Length: 247
Length: 187
Length: 187
Image (cartoon, rainbow over all chains, first blue to last red; front, side, top):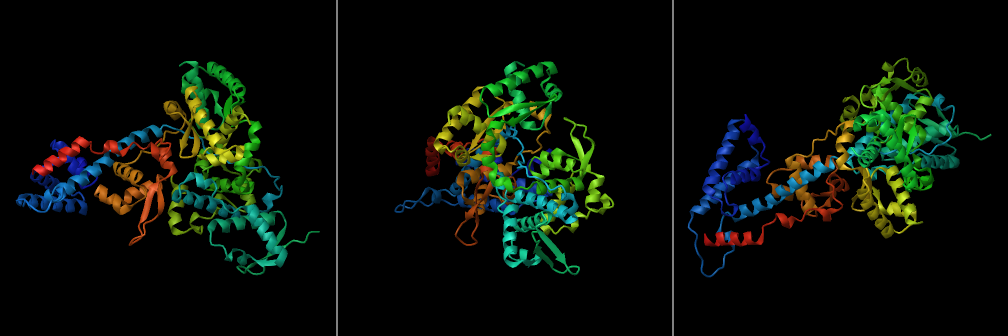
């Protein structure tokens, strides 16, 4: 079973090739292609017999190795007039180049691992929610509705999504491009011009969830502040929003 | 452990904890007796004040906490100004919603979901009698568990917590839904 | 504003903000030019390290953040929940290494180097906010280009991308290269 685990651990054909090269103490610049090809293919067969998923990359590499092997068997024609490039002389060249390129990052990955382990030992302070005190309406509870709560919950949950999608915590702090205050002023402005507006019309032009919720909260705020009155004639009919007369 | 080390570790503990931290918890972590820790903390408090530091250690009963110094309030406010929009109501509502669905829940978990500290929101909700303490969690710091109060049901016109709308009724996009379920139901 | 005051206010700002804070924001709040603020921050960083403080200032590009020192990990961990993130898998680390050095880079090129598909590794890295999209390549399919994020620097304790270990160290030594040529030509 230990064998199984070992086979599974290979990150891909290059990883497996490296393993073979290291295991056999092979000089990477002079890979005995017959030996490596045979070993590589026998690994794949073992993977198969253990019912491990053999991804296409492993098979492509097997084909490449076989191709190189066959090319190596052909006599190298020395062309007098044309100076051939190294890669054309040795069929292994491209493979070696790729292996070396991969190895570079494999080594870097190890360095990263160490750095990661060290950084994981740091603790950061949770962000404070700084609220600038405002005088709260004592009647605030009277106007509370389930919808408020649900909206608030939806907001916090969807903003969690935002966090997952655009994890940049720094931008996250400033992502609220719409403020309730701004929206309140906006609604007040519209109302001062039109006197009465339809609930739907407030949201029609909004495409962004955050803006919708902010607008909705702004409206709730205005209702709480007793600045506006809302009226709904029928169930599910559109809601009318009116500026309350200032007496 | 020498005094320099103690100071250094205590600062790290207060910083990482960020809430009021009990003397006995500090002593336990350091494996030093409380009296000695209290002495060191006293010296540290003087030091922080004397050395023109930007932060201070404040003491409440036998709890200690790091905080910015009041004289820097204007600067801190300037920095946080764009956030001023976060109305108290909204913060409190978000916190309340989480408590309603996940009660009993310690503050830390609410903060984990909201991604910000919730002390003020919780204070408001307690003050408005929408939530109440529901015992404590038996782990370090014995954090208070919060749940909704009878008054919460009244305020939202609910007969019981069973009346809370199921989460699935939320108008969430389906891709969001999984996420939400994870957040709410995964323990 | 004298330097002592600046230090004090900067500490308060970093503490209050808690997340990485941009140099330009600090400079704006202080009404001092960025270069001067950067100098003071540099001195503060040295000071925090020298003076056996429990916390340090870490720098990522032009952002600064307070954090506990790694040597206090054992103590802090006793107080807080142990961190449960297991760290990145080999596949994710290799993918991240390639992106870090070759950014901006499309997925296809990464897969060319690793010799395997990298969708899962890339998804993990995006989710952990270690990489981000950096536009698209103007060719067929307009493949997304990936680069590392600010959080990458933080997660790996780097001040900037310039801090990445020079890749040449991992490249062939020149004498080895000669050897290669020898072998290949002799054949």
